Image (cartoon, rainbow, N blue to C red):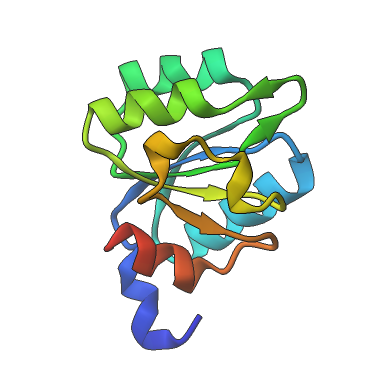
Length: 121
C-alpha cells in the first residue's frame, strides 16, 4: 500500500472473520501496521456475532466459508447495523446470495488498498 493510503485504516476498528490462521494473522498485522485496531480475528460465526454485539466496529473483512459454517449470519448482522464489509474469498460471486449482490468481493490474498476503497475508508 502506498504511503498516502496508509491513513485509510488509521483509527478504524476492523473485524476480521477468517478461518485460515496464517491469513488472518497476516491481515491483522498489516492492518495494525496501518494504524487500525483489529477486532478478532475469529474463525467462528457465533464468536463474530458476539464481537459485533460488544465492540464498536467500523468495517469488516469476511471469509465466506469458515470450515463447516458460512459467514452470512455475520454479514446480515453487519448489514442490519449499517457496518460496511467485504467478502474476502477464493470463491467466485456465485456463492454469494443475491441479497448481497451490491457487496464487494475481494479475492485472496487480500489487497488492503482494494478493501479500503470498497469500504470507503
